[in-house]
Image (cartoon, rainbow, N blue to C red; front, side, top):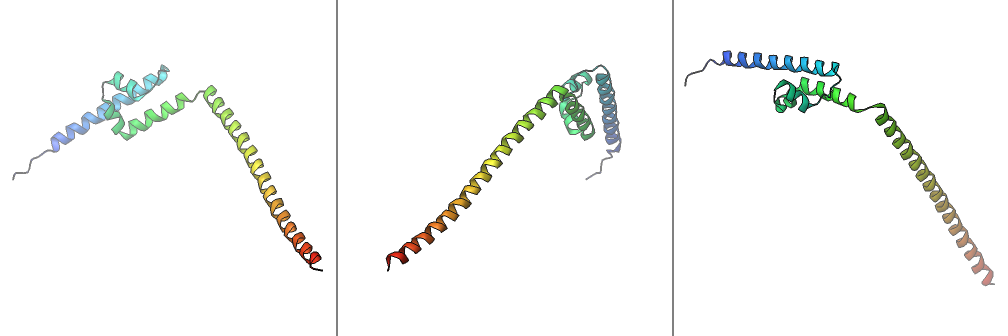
Length: 129
């Protein structure tokens, strides 16, 4: 079995990949300056690289993902989320208060049960005379 010298092919592939990465990063910067929406799909269309290349290249994917997450959270969206969380907190606080009331009723019930037993014992003693 002969050993093939593939170092030249590997070097060319790495060079091609680094050029693609550079192209994608430049295009992302252009898109940001133009206030265009930066997504995997839009970057793929503008640069001609495959979506799988963007997903598989961790640096590019993280950059696009961070830009996308920052863009999608407008002030209105954040305010809506805050309001929803406030409503949820209020609802949970009411639920906690209700549960505490139930615990108080349980304690009162147990106290009354014990008092009832004590009174029954006193009645038995009183009737035994």
